[in-house]
Image (cartoon, rainbow, N blue to C red; front, side, top):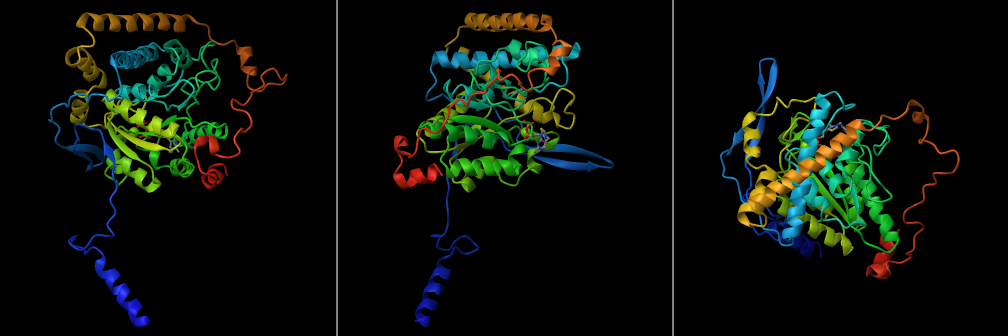
Length: 427
Ligand SMILES: Cc1ncc(C[n+]2csc(CCOP(=O)(O)OP(=O)(O)O)c2C)c(N)n1
Ligand SMILES: [Mg+2]
């Protein structure tokens, strides 16, 4: 008997792949990461110590030709033009905010999503109105898509009485749980992920599978709560659509010094969920990946992790001139500007917009922004006495009702799950 076992063990051992990789490979595991990109940028960032100073150098193929926009499997002409308009509004609103800051009208800092407009706008565009979004600071475009106006965001940065937080916060910490289904950004990186997973669980308990979308950066994805949140969503098959925005920098630390995996989408393998890579400067790729992930969420099949590769084209916030970023890296990504490329796609490739229609569209965005800027600048600051109100309600006049109420589902039947699975899902 012992002899027989020994033989088996030897057979198993000899079946292992040999270190040179030529041995039998039935133990070899292979996983697929869907990669939508038409270009795979290849460069590395190195930290160089130069006497007492530290700088970064970029090495790689920086003169590669700019790839075309990948045709969407889902977006039609009208939808594509709408996304393009959101992206323009996003960019031009941030330019207006920068000017307001320089005029001393902004209280606090300003954060920009320059170069990331396609990621913010085309992702949020894939959600249905009754689904949920949890944006981060660079996703001001997502806020616009969900129904906040540029004047809301401008008033917020100027801490005006009419701003979403009525002047109590001068940054991005606002949402709307009543109408727009937007969870306010949480500064502690990663914390939005379990919150959004919880929103999906809440909907599940009402008998519905919905898509919930949030974002995390290349720096923030290393936090423990990111792991906990995604893992929870994975085991419960919750419809979390997580965009990992790999913009190559977390503050002044390059992505190459943040993690050891080649692509952050590989993290999905360890969670046991699908991982997708997209070019974060291509609105069609962003939308298609988001749409696929949302549909999967709606079918109750669980979360998806989408890594969007792009570049933070400004510093961390307005105070940061990003001088540590090697200039050739900016030049490389400037050629991949998401708006210029999408404009070229719509006007020259698809011919969905004539040059005149495009000019009119851009002028319309400018007009809207000018009106909103005027409104925001001329709107009043909060009165000092208002600071004492609105935080705690003592009269019972601000009852916050749960949006979904008590659980309606006791089994997962309505979700098409087997009873045994239902028990797990509703635990
Ligand atoms: C848990 C946690 N650690 C540190 C910070 C401070 N912090 C705020 S933004 C930031 C950099 C984030 O980089 P990344 O996640 O790549 O996002 P990006 O700013 O590039 O969009 C850091 C370290 C924080 N807010 N939360
Ligand atoms: Mg980053």
